[in-house]
Length: 418
Image (cartoon, rainbow, N blue to C red; front, side):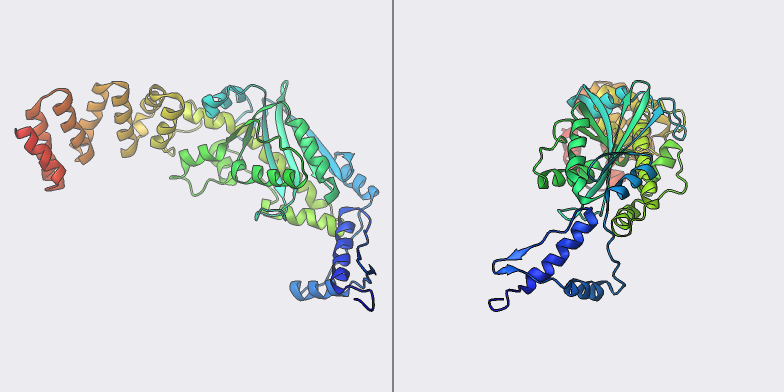
């Protein structure tokens, strides 16, 4: 380089920068080294791509303003800035998503988000589409979907980048829409969507609007209620199981990165419309899931018998969120569907609320079935609460016969004899 003024490393960098600039719709920028301009033949990048991909290298298509406007028109959207498109649609509250309508969202949000927030402000449903699942600085959020109730309609607003240079405008537009948000509702948003958007805000040196509102991630509620009875808790499973909604001809979420990169590299637009449709369905499902999960907790869902719900874990959450009385009422409504863990949880909750009659009734029923925990609870009840040592001793004898010579039971037996 000292004699020729050519820096081989800068040659490779120049080529890569020019390729990125072309894909983003901007012009190529030249890079110079300290000793003057660097030559750029482009052969280095091409050879490395052929070696690593073992395939034909596509010549990048330079995005123009005409392409950007054409994409907006093809998606029935509006170009609102450099490489940024906004899509809007509306659905009435009575819109049926499977067997679930989109009503009752505020009461449901107040109940599920408990008492951390009174849900002041707008309830915003949100979902993102990215270039991958790995995360980090290399993952780009190319579409952000937001939805909230505007009067009698659910307003869906989606922001799509048609090039890398639209990212800053997208982030600012999302910030404006979240300015009045009091609660964010997502599905796996705490683990993925928020993390990815936070990274993009940091890289753009912009303040994140995602930290101010409360965040309700419905995936946690679904896992709590159905993880033991359903094959998985993916949204594609939750929709037919909980909403009665089945997608048809839906583009898999794993194909979204391919759709966006096909547009950048080759100008193909047909798959981007399918990505937008997939994102819209995600948002509508979030709006329908909120009252549907709320109905399961309250035991008012007329479309299910509740046999697939993990009532024990559900009651534990209700006790934490809304108190033991709410948990006990829930368990009493579903008493016919309770398994062993649910019945034991009902007895514990009844004991905490002072309803000893109900607790003893449950323990005696389980004791007749040979449940050791219920027998031990009966022995404790007659010893410590009623001071009926003879009855307590008889329950301990039964326990020793059932579970064998366990030291804890022996100590209780000796104490009762004394």
